[in-house]
Length: 198
Image 1 (cartoon, rainbow, N blue to C red):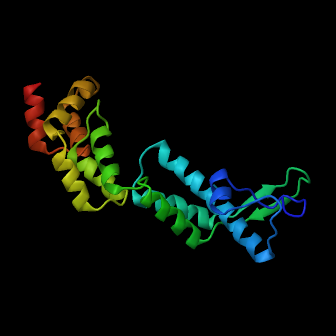
Image 2 (cartoon, one colour):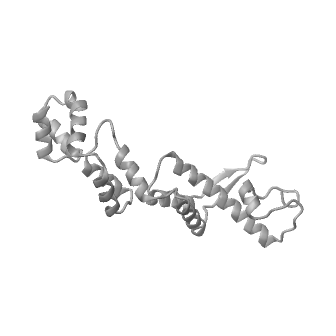
Image 3 (cartoon, rainbow, N blue to C red):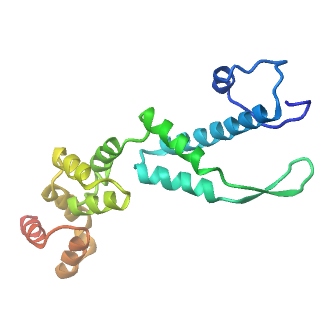
């Protein structure tokens, strides 16, 4: 409360870090800084929640934060019912949020890539080529992708067998089945060998 009116909120760690005390007096510039800290805290908390849904690449987090800078939304005042426009946050604030997430280990492309390689369609199978394409689309550096895939126990032959076991009955025409498997990123040599063995 500022002069008896609600202006912003801070979480408990912000109150402690900023040394806020009841009865302190602040001028308008200090209050503006506290409002900015409030906005930072809310954006950081929302982005952290987004990070906890599942691991994300740096580009995914940057894209999420970019949407927050450009989003202008209409907000209805609960008491008066009036609509007002809420502007997006500044690029400096999103950069600060991103830097804090990196510093605290919540954004790490290497960890994200390991997670993606190990967990991508574990039961139904995914080709190395498809995993690489997905990670490139998520903005992960090709060197990190190669290193993580090479460290993994996954190989195309085993992944292909998973798909053959699961999908073969849906494709009575072997040629169409081979085309389906090729679209999943497997080589024709591996496909022929897998279909011969099964």
